[in-house]
Length: 360
Image (cartoon, rainbow, N blue to C red; front, side):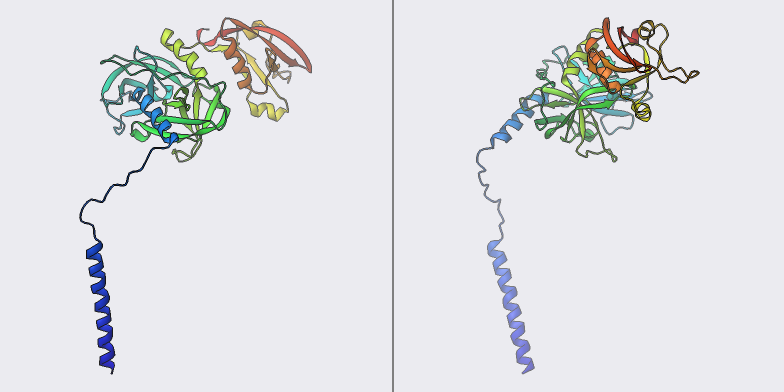
């Protein structure tokens, strides 16, 4: 009896295995499968593809050989750093970030076709983290990117970033404008105002690349991310194009950009908060500066008195140093600024010359 039951089980298992084998033989495809037509791309897809196709030929990789480097290399070489740039005009000027080419002994640009071309430094504005280099044309250049405006941008607007993250060239990322009017400190000790915040992925290597709107216009230059790991965490920043469109022509024309100022050493926001005041505290004035000539007063440590507190500039309320800087940027050097200052509880109005601090 047991032998008969065992035989039945063996026969059943054999039947199952044979069935699986026959099923596998009949269903296995040994030739390429038929491709299913996908239909038309969506309008959003067509628009994104069009933006990339039009803009990407004008986007390049900027290769910087640091001091002491022996050779040109691409992104993986230990003595070469790289970032992104884009064509500004038909003369071969390329815009990138100042920190991309900082300390570079030699420069090169790799085009979208893969050609590596020697480049020369034209000018650097560390206060805005913007630099311009120039390549010698090796033939017809792509059309420069069309320029948009950043003053009328809206949070939630779609944006597109093209760059070379981690040396992977011609990468497109998309997102939205997450916030506007951010302040971004620079290596020069100043702040860039009206900075664009975006969730479009911006990683190391994207620096200097273009941020575009849905019309394919340049609205910013990607410059930094906030991330403990150094990889994208959804918070990226771009220098607004209105600033870029003012700074770049000055760099091309003179190799530098004036730094408008009045000649003060200002207290930081922490000091103001600790003292319970709102405005810019003048710690001291630079000797022979417009601020000194206008009679502005700094802190008098011997008497224990607070310096003048700047509370308004040209009628604009000043809460922090970046507010004052923004007004100075609008006035530029060779102009005047009207300051409202508080001294010993009394408001005073002073007219102060604005000069180029770099030329002083």
